[in-house]
View 1 (cartoon, rainbow, N blue to C red):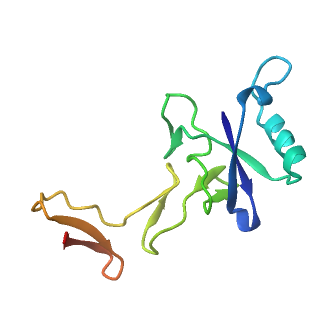
View 2 (cartoon, rainbow, N blue to C red):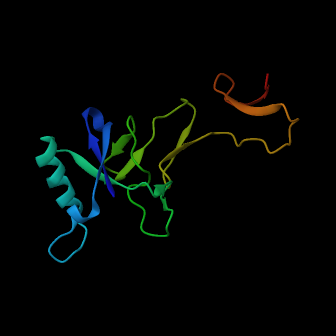
Length: 136
């Protein structure tokens, strides 16, 4: 199955649909994104679609194939035309976009110190750092 993201206002992903791979094949049996877009446009009446891949995350394809648009699209993500990438919603204002992966990263590395069994690290945006929390 091939996946396609429906792109709405401000390049936000508003839906993701799957299409049987054979629908995308041209007369030579080669998969073409444009054929999938034409198919979905005729089916839905909506013209703006971009192909995405469940196997792509952080610019890496799980099956060692060519990654498609950095990340698999999801509702609420943004399609960035300049990067030709799907970018997740920014969770915290302090986080920084990694240009290679198109994923948001913390500005301070998570500590590696081993904690007690009932403790964990949690991001605290007000201090822009990690803090130790205790599970209840």
